[in-house]
Image (cartoon, rainbow over all chains, first blue to last red):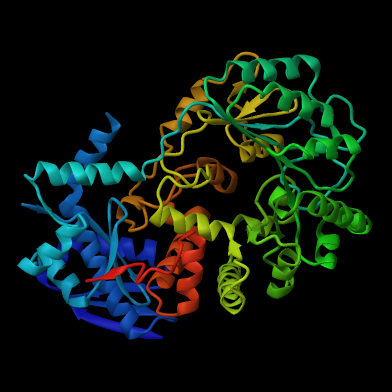
Length: 81
Length: 466
């Protein structure tokens, strides 16, 4: 069983809801919780290292999806024409 | 402003980054941190832009290249050129997990009548393509070799034609064997493993007859004539080597490992088939790894799990396969349809089973009046994974697909949150496994991946690391 705790930068707090949602969707065995500015990930089957990587990948994924959304939609609209 | 159209997925070896075109790399922790902080170095930008992972918003050429890459991932359904025909619903077996809802051998009114056959032949005459694929399903189509022959003869004009007869090979007539002598006719059959397993699941006392017929077809026409696939009961899977041996010993090297489909009779008699368990996924993974071991140990033979290879080629060779169960968008009733024994038209064979099971009527028309129905248009409005809330966050979206009928079969609706569906769980598992193998240093794994991709040799690497 692994547990990883991170300080969550205040400016990233807006990601909190979507991160909890996304972790539940894509890593259903991982439990994610927030308390104050600290985030905790735990799993019965994954190591500390695996959880740390999941946390990092999820933040990168969420930010990347948000940042590239206009271009992604522009491509889809163009291909649908 | 710069564009970094990446999505990320943590796998055992690191953090996978995949762009919307399906190009990918394994990212170092430091690079991921810099992407998060929007703090890329000039070196990062150079490396990332090389494969289209980074470009400037005002770079029209880069945007076009990106759009082209995305377009290459989109499947385009062309003209109707693939028919799945059900000349009879009658069958000479009654398997517990029959997916097709059959009727008894002596029943009347469950074969094409003259009017239905005529309408199907007329449809074939009007198809605008030079290419045709016809799959005969049932029931047991070998019960009506005359109907099969009538269809095949009508396809003479096509430049490229392929006929696949899905048969249980239980009781075959001379007329049926005569059909098989044609080079563009193939057989698809079921082989659940060793003799005892197949007898238990399907043919009982008639197993010897099935095996004799199988051997006769193999002897007379060779293994290329047949594709066989096992149906596996996840609650009681066979021994892996016994299953592989039952195929390899007959020079059948492609094994489509298929759990009991939640269709037809299986809905009642194998209700656990609605969701596949962790145990099934573990069995599947052990099976693939065992095949890799055997391929490495004996380089004379290349075994493959068919669906694993299809998914692998979705990553490296988009557009290579025309596997209609895994594509995006996946419109129904366009380039292929199923025509039942009574002329009713369905978008897929699974939708025929759902209708026969009285779960939901997914017929979209009939051979006499057409199938451009409102129902078809309604379903096709949802036939893409492009706008789904979960799929747009999923790194594997460029490789994955959409299967409306599978969702309807399992959940009775198409708006179940994607990651809660069996379709999504299955593909997340397979793509995770594939990428772990892509980044494996094991030469046995690298060898099998190259073989499954039909490469002339093992490349220096399958995936880059940045």
